[in-house]
Image (cartoon, rainbow, N blue to C red):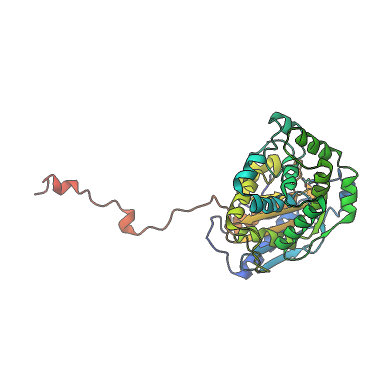
Length: 351
Ligand code: GLN
């Protein structure tokens, strides 16, 4: 990944954000750097996604104080796709608890593509983590609700609370993916054969396909991310969506698995939990500080937005967001200098 962000002002976490005008300047710089990149390809395995404008690009930073900073195409709508996995996971952990979801779905990286069937077989039918399709389908199956329709309403309502507005289904994306999601149906059947889902696999895939077809923009993603950055409270609506513990669990899963088989590289360069989607969206969470939402549909070979990663890498460094970056704390001279050894007097060498 070319992060293109070596010469930036600040690189360690300060514990708080710089003043708003400085955030706006840094956002502008992040945007300009990423905009120069034209590599990557728009996804076309879901046919309707191929119609996206490859040059569309928007970045929104939403603070835990509810203030939003936006640049570019932050109002352009696209389907949330895999980013929904992060938020459905949070809703399911909120309902069923840390241990149950850990046992059924797991938290370890598969190291394989997001839609891998082999990963299921290699792990005796265990989906491994909720950020790949197998784990996400198993997670959606755990969503409370007597019927598929009730589960879908709970998903839509829950994700809408993260966004702070009622999210709508993109019917065209839903239809296009429903007509071409044979692989996800196979994954659901395989999971059923291993006893990992106990609902009708066709219904579960249908709910999962709808959740992926929810229509959002980069500003929605920023607020959704900011809710996870703010201990589960939506900083714009003021509503509590999930608990603090659920946020912590979700962010740990995103740090390990949010960018598929590139998750290690992402964490190394950006140092924050994040989640990408094949329509070109990307969310990043700086706990206690901000959520970042980007939209740019050209993807790398793992299915992650190219410009989104570059802009976020710059923001992470310039805003001092990387959770692994520290500087030695300022010490007073008394602490910094070793004190004279007590032993001198004690041994009577000076008297
Ligand atoms: N709906 C897509 C799928 O299941 C989501 C994948 C993604 O965004 N990576 O294939």
